[in-house]
Length: 246
Image (cartoon, rainbow, N blue to C red; front, side):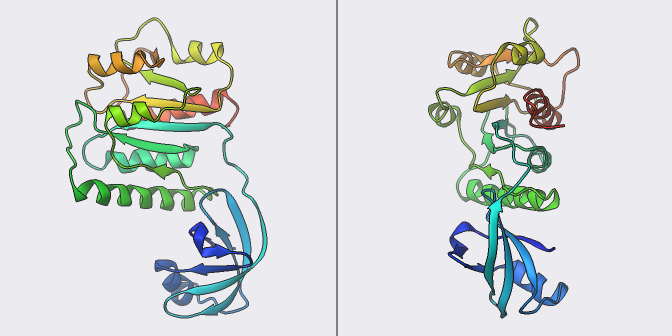
């Protein structure tokens, strides 16, 4: 059955309204008509079975037949704090981490981030990244769409960290504590924050400030992973360890 994401505010009681580019897809590609049924998702984990009532050029009106909480979402909320990389690497990171089950992605203007975004470019890039997450969620049939926050600095991120979250930073100069040994030692938390540096990694001052906030520095082994590899790799290991993947 065809599946479409609909903003929660466009689902009220037993009615739903589909707008935007999906209208054309429903009308001209799928050639659906009133009476046809489809699946709607609100991006927050709820799944609705609906029936089309009316179609026009601007919207598709539907009647909700049933609703349920979508399956497959990790109970462990993992947020990826990703140092802003060059080129289109951020889009690849968002896509893969969405497929794997990330809860939130926070782009970080790190000291060694080559790309500098200012003004309206910050909002434009966030909007683009959120669309990437939406399309990835559609592709992997995930009921929720991870939030991609706007580009933030260290102060903004550190001030927003939950007090009880497990903070993890892979760092190439750490050689005593592995990610495996850390995960084996801690109880399953409710939230995890992963800090991944851009090309060139984090500067010592950045490592120091986040470690002072209780972040655990870990090594991933002898091989140095590229920034676009590290995030998905660590996310996979964390979710697998806590029985949220595989």
